[in-house]
Image (tube, rainbow, N blue to C red):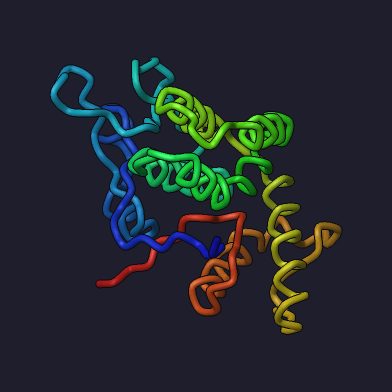
Length: 223
């Protein structure tokens, strides 16, 4: 099983509630986050499927996760949201028709899931390993839904830093090519540079095809 990042060139939708839609600088957001399509959450239009994550006041949507508008003020937590939205959207559209399909999807996403909620991810991995080769479509769908459920949960700057460092350390063993911008979890200046380091390692993953599990789905602008 080849372990490489999933590279996409299409945008991933994140919803904005109407009040936020009218107040944010959408052109600036579009420039800063070309991988995200910010869409208006039109709750009154039943024919319009909601994106899986909607930033707004917290009013619950029957098929979406509500996210506090405060996330717009925190670059790291917003990066976490968009990374999870991209992984969620990718998995949601995967056809999981066999145990092999399920294993391959999990193989790509398990490191992120372990970062988000390690106990849940470990249990899920053990139960998946016990599945029979002829697992029914209902069982496969259940496991897919459980992975998606983990991806709706937020991470934290500390967990992201530790995940970055673990992935980078594994990469370093293979390349013996240190990247001077990457800081250890103990470095007190790391909070200021974490976002830059994440972007550097995403670029490195696309260039070297070495798996960066902290960000399993990476956007590449082909424009």
